[in-house]
Amino acid sequence: MRILVVEDEKSIAAFLARGLKEEKFAVDVAYDGEEGMYLAQINSYDVMIFDIMLPKKDGVAMCRELRAKKINTPILMLTARNAVEDKINGLNSGADDYLTKPFSFGELLARVRVLLKRPTDNKTSVLKVEDLELNQLTFEVKRGRKPLKLNAKEYMLLQYLMLNAGHVISRTMISEHVWNEEFDSMTNVIDVYIAYLRRKIDRSFKKKLIRTIRGAGYMLGNPQ
Ligand code: CA
Image (cartoon, rainbow, N blue to C red; front, side, top):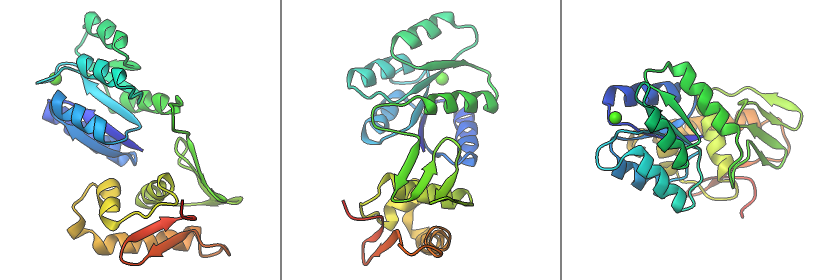
């Protein structure tokens, strides 16, 4: 699950990014409305969190423009305390929910979870590849009837492979999406985690789902 946070107050942005990463989300942060619009259009997010008061372009305008472009990703708006006007504008612009500052991380997470449960055009909460299932709301993973215990990084890696099942995923893509890191520092780590995943999802099953594509990366399931 990937979340975009657009917030110009660096301390709040950092607080949100840290908390969401601990909850196994991949997080991108932008500090003004233009950068936020750019990221919102080039990437595919599961939820977007916009502060309303932003440099260059405010959260309400971003929301209107994205909806006009048929980008229907759930949007949570952050508003100043008691700014009733903000809330009305925010919801009229196509935002799905709003949260008044200051808020606790727990409140924010609860709102995000509700938004994730809302089905959008092309996303469902349970990913399936053959008999492998990953539930993006409960974080449960099973193959056939066997529940599998994955740690946070294994989960995120598997989720990313499942979202892209049947397509070759390079190590660079994995390092950016799953670790939010530059590739150089990550080469060995990725291979190690692929080995961990194989042990869990493939070792005791006849049909192997994770394929190594020589010189290119990895692929889950049959080519599409
Ligand atoms: Ca602000």
